[in-house]
Amino acid sequence: MKKILSIGEANLDSFVFLSESNAHLDLNKTRRELCIRYADKMLADDLVFSTGGNAANAAVAFARLGLESQLFSVLGDDWVGRQIEETLKDEKVDLGYTQKEEGTTSYATALLFHGEHQLIVYHVPRRYRLPSFEPADWVYLTSMGEDWRHAYERVLTYVKKTGAKVSFNPGAFQLKAGIGSLRPYLRVSDVLLVNRAEALSLVERSASTTVRQITEDLYELGPKNIVITDAAGGAYTFDGQELLHCQIFPSKVVERTGCGDSFGTAFTAALLHGEDIIQAMRWGMANSSSVIGFVGAQKGLLTRSKMEEVLNDNHRIVPRRIH
Image (tube, rainbow, N blue to C red; front, side):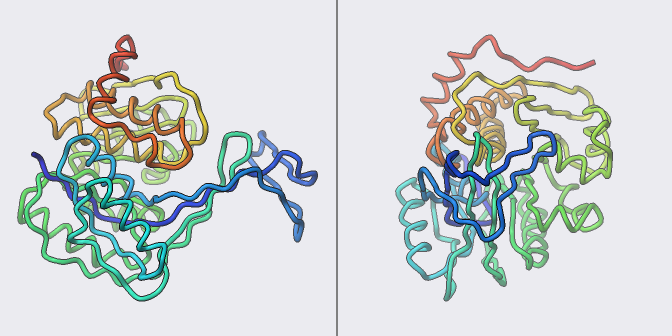
């Protein structure tokens, strides 16, 4: 069984479904703004808690898809941390590298309204102390908090020493640091996973820039494969020669948390299982189409058998080359 190590954040996700009966809640779709009257009380229709965080989502996805899944993350020693730990153990994630610190666990709150969410994230300040990892076939490197640089340097040393392949999904602190800080990690990445807005930010291009230009700019930074997700617009890959686009699989949309994580992890898992890029894109679409049908980033993650079912149901949807 292939082994993959996910490195990054694990946290509690809470989903607050704002009621449409709130008189002073104003959604402006033109400006993409949700306005709440200051100091006002709002009603919620529902509240859901689940385990989340990019690395935890990835670890669960890999385990369900038949890989030996390991996780490095840091949890607090509170009840939230204990709950996350139990959830991940139930999913057959190896927590041998996961650490606990005194205090609280990171969390995120999503305010949901009309099918979209506004995400509020709190990364508990950590000093990441990475252990000595045993060799793995692949590393999934993703979002970490403000003190990420030393941890990333340790990962870079590990990858160069062991020859492990890398899927790189930078988070907010990493993207804010810019290309100068990320270049060493881009150069060792077999797969760079970003959404369109993140891609534009990395290459400092305007929203009118073509996908081909964006992917070519990113490819010049070192990754072997570029993957750009574009919400309802589907997803793109570029390997330095061919630009491919895959449309989304039809599905019911409940909410979109974890949509990008689910695509990137299934894409990576497909490669680990020996699939080509075209099939990897279909795995990504299958996984993301399932996840958005549930609340939270993990409930809809597919098992290997369910993956085959969804792929068969959508056999007519295949990536197309863009000339």
